[in-house]
Image (cartoon, rainbow, N blue to C red; front, side, top):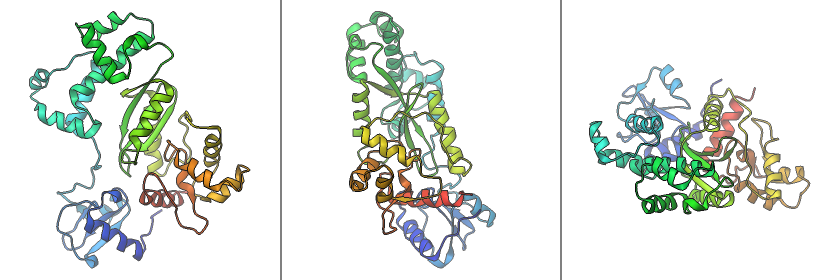
Length: 353
């Protein structure tokens, strides 16, 4: 089923194309009639006139219309896709997570250390060495929680100095190694590329705790709040739950998945959990108003509190707060951005049957 772009939407898309607005990445592609190429919204090439543009919701539709990919913006590659260099080095860390990496190791791989540092900083908010160190500290904390001595964890992590190990551990984990035990949580964080931009998933071996677009305002505070509430640490890495939600998200964006099965951990008040449970009852492809949602949970007068609870949802898309709109038919707010909300509603209606 093809989603038809109206004239008014085409004008909005054209303005976003002119402005190179990153919020529209993944929402549309522009076929340039004068050159025969198609571009992503943020392409830096000179912009054609509106009448020389044709808009598509998928790259496949643009290809079927005989447009070829632009060589400048590469619309067939996801804009947030991890580079081959970063992917190779992350795989190297996972192959030997206890290895203590140094710049000399990068030189031995014929890799420029400054390039690696820049790409990891952009991708993960930390350098490659910092990423590798955080991974080692996660293993060390697991050893301590499992009953191993601090000195064993220290040596296995490649630290000869106990004070150096203690300081590095505390800096990453938020407390000294002797303070950690089996009651502390170890969560892993991972980027997941999606059609609407990269998302951050925080999981452990049992549950998905957080799934948010990485540009959500206040995300850092939400992550820190989660870490404090669970009395643990969040380190880079993947779990089976990460793999499950990544697979389900891919199917969702393809239109072949309508209900998520990933196990969820709901971190909120009793009222918030009640509101989120009602969100999960809204059928795929349908919308409800805030008043409808308040009425459904037996709190008809509390629609503002319901709206606040929706805004506190930390599991975007999976707990579908994007299906709640205003009583007047307007979309209302959405922490991931109103353009994403519009896209998600249209996407689900497209594949509703």
